[in-house]
Image: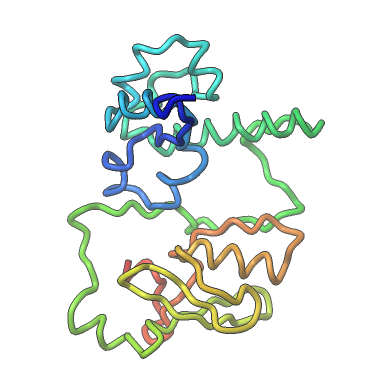
Length: 218
């Protein structure tokens, strides 16, 4: 194999095009990754799907489980693209495991239901930031004190605004995580491993000093 044929992961919606408007948990999720040769990855570069997919045969896109509807390949439809591709990937795995197909609708009684405020928070480039003196007042030696109430537990943790990491010093989910969502997933899994642990960390954690959601200092 030559270096140009080496398989690499590629962001279907290039990071440079979506990271200013969507959370890292979205644009860096498996639903936004494809596996291509290094040569193809360099050729695509930061071109949007609406540009490069028009030149690709439909059967090649199907091999990567890319939604057939070209309308979801524009940046303003990025969440719709992710939802469709997640469903397609889930059904591939379900078929391999002999499980029923998932249609993307309906509730699952064996998992925790996400509250209505667990929606993706779009990070606009001109959104107000909590900076300077105010955020410094929230800092301790370990970071900004945060907590999460889940079932009968209160989990205390520290958030580092610079790296956006979350450290849980003790209890369920103890450890340091690259994102608030990663820390939230660890907590839910540690307390209730029978349920789907996926959570949006920005609305799972609360800033202890203010009583406001972590998304307020995002």
